[in-house]
Length: 322
Image (cartoon, rainbow, N blue to C red; front, top):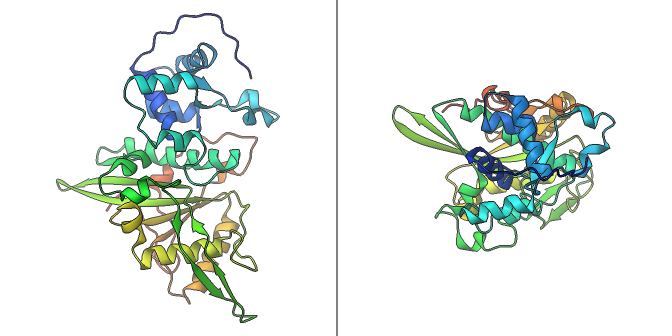
């Protein structure tokens, strides 16, 4: 739970650098997810190495929030990047300006609570793990999107490049009152996939909305965050192709991940009502039930990529192929 250095000499290797790079992109990663991403012959030795990088020199941190669980000592440790790890990346020219600071400050998306941020990282890293197992897929990180020349300079230089100003309004069918919001939309994450098909590269990009069943589907107004407001905002983003002007992306699908089936069905019913039964081809839904308990650590779940997603009014949709 706290550093206990033994003055062991640490000689960094390429795998250590890759661990630092991953933690510069992900706010948090569990040791199990890190091992799935980096690989190695022995998971036990890998976990021991993470301990050395934590205790000796402060290359890695262990967020203290994880120790709140009663059985925390028996779950895979969660890591984030330490100051020494940041310095190593900078010395190797791997700390891209503007991206590392977003992740380190918890602003990859909005400022999130610990368990929400960890859920985001669990979901996205599981998708990346699935992509690495498929030779015809390549995961495209937020860093790569951010540094792409198609990213508008105004967006790149903004305080939070993920924030999109999307004014929306909604008229309640029961009260006939009209509510408005000029709040920005800030996805929990943004990433892409490159597909190699018949010798041709194709691309899809995704915004993530991860919900631990703490965000209501509906509120009485649009000034407070709700799924109603998000769905209305994404509808405008797609209708106006704001994903092109804001992020320089050719397309956008929205992945909505919840922790239980009931909440997912509630959100899908809301989409059905807002579209008058027509459904939506860009709003995709899935549950990750392993995240429902804070007392158990989810294993890497590449099925987030390989198992089809639900859509309202349309059949299942597979994001691992085009």
